Length: 426
Image (cartoon, helix red, strand yellow):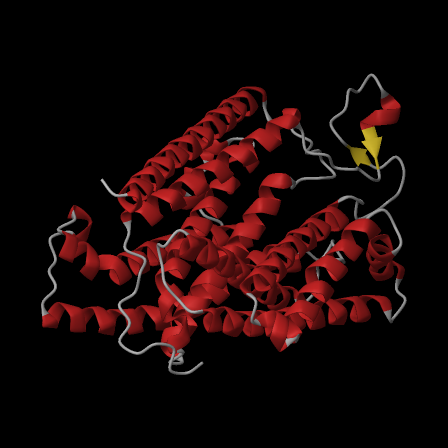
């Protein structure tokens, strides 16, 4: 046996052991998360850091974040087909898989946030059609079905060539392939507005609350969509570079530069909306509006805000605005990672600054769920939210499930596109 053959065999053996270890770690994390959720279900939300003043916490934070990741991924995939951007073709399948896994995780994060998750079916059986939460759950379900259909349609022909049962008995005749192309175009017309609607409705859950001046803004939906484009495209870039290194997909470095330039534009749009939001709230000098801005700029949330602004907006833009650095995949990956971190911190700022202070900050405040024997701690006008270990374990368990699901998708689904014309429009 030659040295080259031995090297290949050793590499494959190492890969199998690495995959087994990765899977084992994810299963342990999932088991810990499931145990924490069972403990929370038995004892109630009192075991979390949530209180009356802080009705939403880490679960809704990750729900918002993953909705954005999903919407951004499907917007990239659909826009490429609708507007004839063939440069996206090598990563289209990856984008729709990422979008599907992300929206599934977003829906899962809603469940532990409910005090009585066993009653979730009541939302579907007896919906309040005027509630933005009902709108959001409806669009999340529809979007999940749409994303899964999108994934199947893009991989169906290759699955059929493999003889996989996932092809559902379909073939690869010229007629079936032509039908696939027509359906892809139809789904693109549906998926693009659905992705925009998904994040808009999530934004309206916050933006339609008149008692929360920091949220009550018409710009909330456009801001959410802009941040979805940033985070969704950033994640697609990171996953694409990772899978190319693992030889699961193929594309050239100039596609990375192209995506980096597009991400730079999205970062500018995000910065513009954030600046417009701050200017509109701060310029009139109304205390209810300037209070949250002051808390972000120089108050208790200033470290988070300046991290969002510098790390998540300024640094990625500087990297992506220079053509020389944009041609280096490792720097584009760095910018994408920082942009994702910035969007996550932005979501955190939105949640904490909107809920930490009660709408009417008059003593004694509102009950926060502490022991009534301690009157000084039973009421408050302000609550500093800190997630408990239960919340962290539940979140880690859901993230591990998402990582395992994506890993299985990478192993089972054909993500490599058959390109007829390579990047003609770059």
